[in-house]
Image (cartoon, rainbow, N blue to C red; front, side):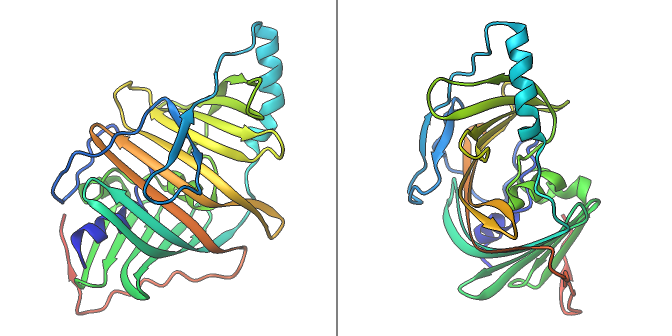
Length: 291
């Protein structure tokens, strides 16, 4: 398998940002940077680019009481999560980075908070299989007949960044990438949206919700360090699946230093709470690749 293709497949397991540099095993080229003050506005844009607009004014209400009242109103919306035991989906994926573009198909299977299974194909030919648990990472390179297995804490040895199990799970299902507590909120006079700022010990996240149905429009995630990597996620094309309101189109842009990466996922199939298996047989002919 083309090594760049493998990197694109592996990026599916790397949505947890790290303050460390991305360790790409391919040649570097200067990438077009992402404006950190912009939020993705249109996930239907062609793969040649993503339309962006300046983010909404995040000025908080004038009084502390008004701020508390708005945070109180928006807390149930922030705390709402999709309830499920298992998730399965098929998505067309477009990946772009400093070295070019790739398109492939990814089949996802998730047992919530336990297992994430990804099968990657190109032109119906299997090219990679990924299995992530709370403490382990496995990568089956079916073209080069190699298996890589590592503790999840050491996966950054071979991936662009460390793997964050819950961020990966949340992105696939269509949830905010991180949890945390609301520290600020705003209600712009234009745009039909609410904004909240959420923080945990490592990250600051800004989420924009549509007022019409309380669905997520965009999410911005960055480390507390001003010069750390950042991600912008757009959620679109909402559908009702098994009585759950789900975004079937996601665009993730990652900026780390001079390098920019983009991942578009468009789901053609998604189901919840079906009986699933997570096959990951390692043929005896495969060699184990040490990082």
